[in-house]
Length: 360
Image (spheres, rainbow, N blue to C red):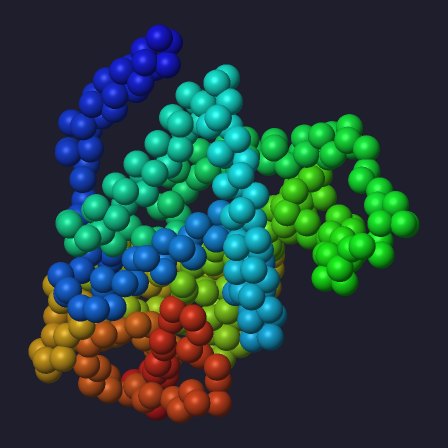
């Protein structure tokens, strides 16, 4: 009865937050995952995106490393590990459901996880808000998944005790002649399987899963997994090396996505200043426009950029970062051929203008 009291109390507490949510709801926060196009890709993409998120819940190797070979090997190992571990989790949860003492909590946790997944897909396909695009959203039910994994591994952990309590089956030598060759091979294979390091039961299997979890944690804290799609840590050193004069970072602003991209650059510049790698303090311009990309000549973002440049002192380096509006070369400013510089990194597409003093 206590569990039902907890459920009711949780629902009541959640209802109390509804007015707060309605008063503070900002559609810009979720605009980047909203889609109105009903194409074949938009129908199947959530399935694969969700599968990728589920795989990374139990294993995450350096799939975002700079080496393509490491990325491919890490991806293959993660996929193989996922399908290897599925039977272990299945047998463990099945055993917990058959146990009268663990059936109820296992069912509640399983219902919570399955309910959350169903809700995600319902919001994605019915409301057109693809929650599967952000892997971090899946961690809403991540604690429940981890508890279920721990419960499932209990069966494997206790398997060795059950096996050790049973005497080994020995085939007398005089009976070997009556056993066919195929049966003898099966016996030999079973012996080899018992010593195979990746057996699907026993404490070895639990140890392998634990080691994979530990390595996955190291991957995350080393910034080789769950990276942002934009990499300010790669772009800022390039800007510091190329520009020797004051810098203006300009971008077109449509949603909070662009705000986050610029904040990433700002934090990286601040980190460099603290570590004394560079004392450069750039200025930032977020030129707002209603559409994501403007192709007209008189775009609002283009006008804002021109007005800002007319008020700033020279010399000045203007870095256009994901600037999705036409740019007419400002007075005494010229675009540099930056093909020799690797100025376009993940999430950032740049263009550099050198603005000279008026008397030059």
